[in-house]
Image 1 (cartoon, rainbow, N blue to C red):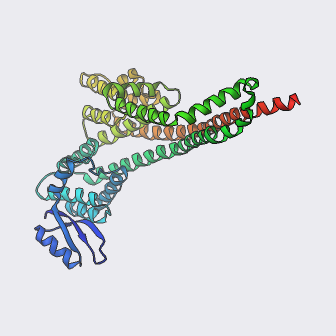
Image 2 (image 1 turned 90 degrees about the horizontal axis):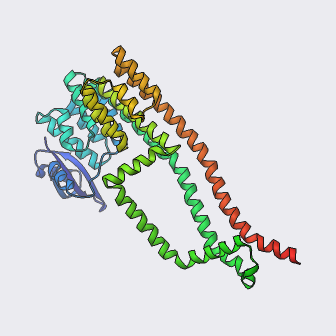
Image 3 (image 1 turned 90 degrees about the vertical axis):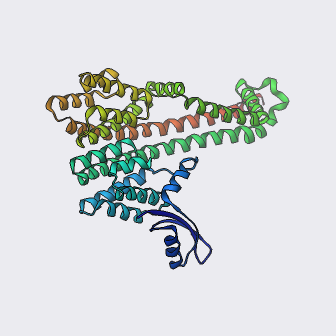
Length: 401
């Protein structure tokens, strides 16, 4: 039964949007009237998706949406509920219209005879890892087990993503506060205080003179500084969107003392968990490596993994290629080597993934504990310099009396 997206108005004049299934748009309008809603527009989901693909504002499935729907599907399929009914139930459970639209479109494809993996692929909303894992589960006849593994994977990735984002919030707040305080002092406080010293500028300390000139420059040129800063940010973003810019940025990140180690750790954990679930699902190693490369957000590491895939195709060992790249932890490489030797690569990859997740979590906590006092010291240092520049002339005047 096809799905339709509707826009309607209730008795209070509020607009409502959602997705319903019916034989025709006319039947959907009748259902809406029975619910005491006034239909404004009713469009087939497929038509709506084709329109939205040509716009900049197409809503994507978030990591949370993906993790939630995968877990719900896993539970329903494990309870022996047919796939199309499980997808319909998850769609009804969702409170987001675009998620409902995607799921009901997938259900329509499944009812037409498409495999679940093909339906996911045609929607254009799911990553290659997700589609390949589902396809492997359908081939093996163990979709329930694969969905359970996939649910755990998506939940772990979402938790790691939130952890990293949460760890960056406090340093960013401190940085913005530091900038705001310094700008406030330089544009409002310092000019009023140094007015008392203008009659004797020649006798002022060098630090005070430098502070006064800096303050005058900021007050006189703040518009140009703002425009220059915004222009610089726009140019930087445009440069980073180019291939050369992206590679240059990724190389710099990997060479930074602390953040380079963090980037390597995050990408190693993501690579290990991706490769683990794919190999456990029965995906060939070379195909799993290509998907694992695409999952990495660092293009330098992505190229290293793609090179490893080529070498494995030629008969090389995965552990040897990863070790040569220099971007993966020695312990993880050793565990992969052990898995290759014992024939239990999927098991060792799973253990390596868990180990890397723990190491990344610990490193983030350590880095955050180090950054907080450093930023506070930096902020205090700037304020101290400003205070000294203001106090030195006062001390000199007292000494002259």
